[in-house]
Length: 314
Image (cartoon, rainbow, N blue to C red; front, top):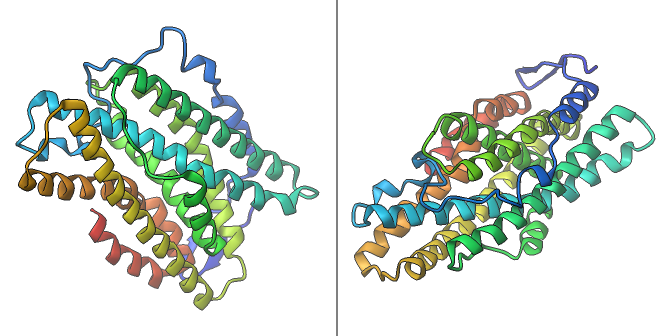
């Protein structure tokens, strides 16, 4: 069990153990075969994403049917982008645990379980992409390739990457609990995928927090500041990706609906949907209370800096 430790002026609770997390992870673990295949299909008459993330109602020049189509396009991108980010999370977690293979058995097992679940999620979202194409009957582009994005992200300081992963895990929790769980109008199959993804990511968030603490152990305030500079640089890189994804979503929308927006409509579409993507993938993680709590532990000054920057993504 980790003792309570001090860093900056924040205090971290040390009563979480790798053993406890492993036990819970094994309890909530699910199989791909239980979620996809056979008669488990999506209903394309329903929305996939909650409006708080999709923000399609902010486009008054679209009809109700067109808003539903755009909502589904955003849902497709949502799960495919999760699959993309997990392709850099997986090697990072494996590299983190490799030096510990001959030490804490529960720590090793917990992180290997983490890695195995991320590999399973990548496979799940690839299967989802195939099922979506069959039902939607129109192509939807996604930024990439994943290997190039992973290489760029992993080129940054390990603490920056660990913070980004923690950001993503808490982002996932916020999306499901705040916007998805109680929305009864979403397609049940799509919602099931989000629920089961959330169940396992809830345990990953705990391990990510321990990973951040381990990497930051012994770092100076200046080293932490530089690492958070790197975290923010990755955020800028991802924001450019969100801009590109918005353009791909516009292409997919026009192809699926057969409607070409005029220049004024395109401008509004790109502005509204880029900001929606910013909030979905950057703002909701960067402003999550648990993520901010970790920043306080690392450096109260850096938390204040990140909070100020986060306003752009809300």
